[in-house]
Image 1 (spheres, rainbow, N blue to C red):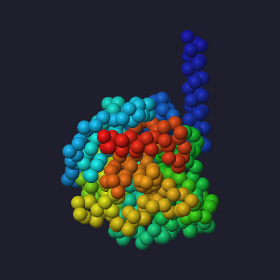
Image 2 (image 1 turned 90 degrees about the vertical axis):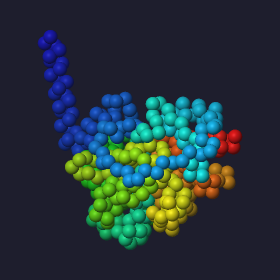
Image 3 (image 1 turned 135 degrees about the vertical axis):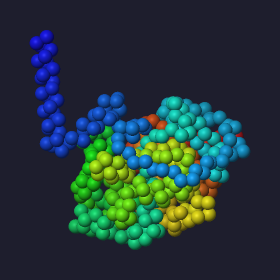
Image 4 (image 1 turned 90 degrees about the horizontal axis):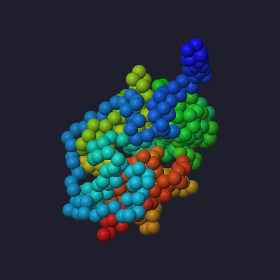
Length: 383
């Protein structure tokens, strides 16, 4: 009994010293990481982790349900698609043809209204809010300096950084995009309860506006710019600009760093469902119009879905770009294989949400699963 008591006392002392060390070294965000992710058996963020964080609710306006296509669910997934859905943990696969639901299927206990984390698909929304802020007169243009809104970026090379650089991932900062390292700035940003402090500590090491480097921090800075320019919380601006006007059917949630600081995790973390996510793809497919009303400037939309840099043809302003054969696609993409894939010429939108993507993972590359979800959708539609 004495041995057990001594062991417990020793463990408590070790834990206490560890916690004190984390606070002294300013890595106490790891306590939340352990509690919300690692102790639950995950090595990175997961689909329903939004339940473990503070969130702000995005309300709906007048719902506009999608209509079902005449050929709704008349075709089954191809054998290859069915295997991929099983192997990679798909929870939703939806094909929208001519603005009607052509096919939809849900898995693993998820359904049409189930919420799951969007991860980096949120970046497309934030870029859209930049276009909206320019349209509303809050921001002059894509060339306006970030320094006009964020004083921490007014010196040296940082003074040359523009809001357009943030949207095109060309800020030149020292942000390091690592999802599985507990000590990376990406991990800190996900768990820290003062996200603005984290962002204001970034350094601009390279000349902004020259090259593409995928960096979630760019989108987070852009969100801070939009909030400062508009005087509105980003989740409120998002609600009034897009979620309500696009006829979303379900309330959504956007994670914030904490109740006290109330800054959205803008580079990720909108929890919603496949068919409501698809609406933003439709808005860009239709040149910024919804029900005949110009929600977003068509020139901004057109600029967003073409490459900014010839050396990086895979990225525009907040949207990923891919050509497969003679077909051009633009898409929203998320960490574990969340996709809204759009082909305007064919009037097709493909949405896939799931627990993981194909194992050829990497930062800023097109993994093989993307091509599979596209190719098999077209095979289904050809039947």
